[in-house]
Length: 343
Image 1 (cartoon, rainbow, N blue to C red):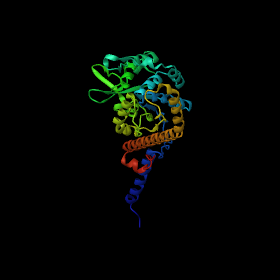
Image 2: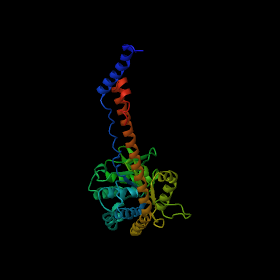
Image 3: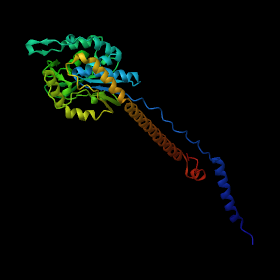
């Protein structure tokens, strides 16, 4: 029996239409696979140094800096409290550890001590201010080559104040004005005393300067069962006791804490400056393996985080490209070239 011509025509016409559509669409092309995601190298860790207070024991900071420099640990920012602010200001001015040691050896204690009898025998502090300004070449804090902060305590409110601009010597003087020994420093109608009252080792100030990794140097006086006999020792011990809890919490936020063995050095023992410097050297050398290990660990964490961020960004871009590709295709085109947008 013959098949009607109309029935033969329909399948043939459908096949012809499919062929035409396929010809119009061309051969499906698979996009080239995206290149491997390579994250840019993360920025280097910024290392900050937090130098604590401790009067004459502060010479130990010089020994710490000497060993860090000698072993390739670059310090980007420095914050100081009290004696730490003195060393920190000189270091931020561009001096290296050997230059600071030369200044320390040549320092005449009388050149930074100006007692005023009418104020009850308190040290005025102007001589210290002038000494620091002379050493840094008269530069303001914000003009020093290395970012620097001096931490002080506002006497009227008890709040922590961080000086990051203005007169360098005056900020150091405010940071170093031990209550009962130095006169409070008046700056713009406010009075300031030693930063050790609220921040014995200024870890937070170093972070605020932009440090990713903070090395803290703690030379604070520790209660050891014996009572100091001189007035400066009593005041220094009292400040240490007052700031003990806050100081411990702040020290816990450091990445590495270096504690030079300077407890045998009194706050007024300037003749033991060489012993303090050597104690700082020994403590820094002992801490070097920990510093290097933790720096490497944090650098790896930053690198991995950068790689994850780059991968996530590439995945978002690929998903958006696929969505855009699919939006440009018609229904029949997607049926005929269903893998054209596969990445």
